[in-house]
Image (cartoon, rainbow, N blue to C red):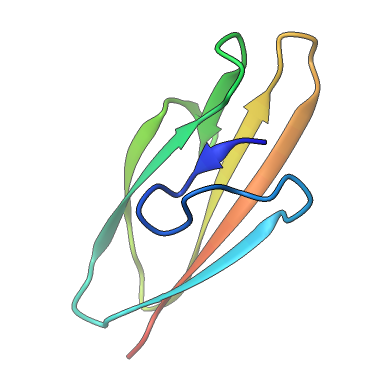
Length: 86
């Protein structure tokens, strides 16, 4: 089980890959924190290896991907769909 989307989703269910979040139209960015429970795993936010990323939000829906790759090479991708309500 991985911890991602801190402050929005405290703990991610390993069986759930898609998460949805509605934000106010005035919010233009969101900071995503992602951490694998296994310290040897690698974490990518929108294809960049990092545990924290500030992402620009566009009108309508913005998709943010969080990919965790274990030391053994197993890969799991979570998607956060952020809907900027207009």
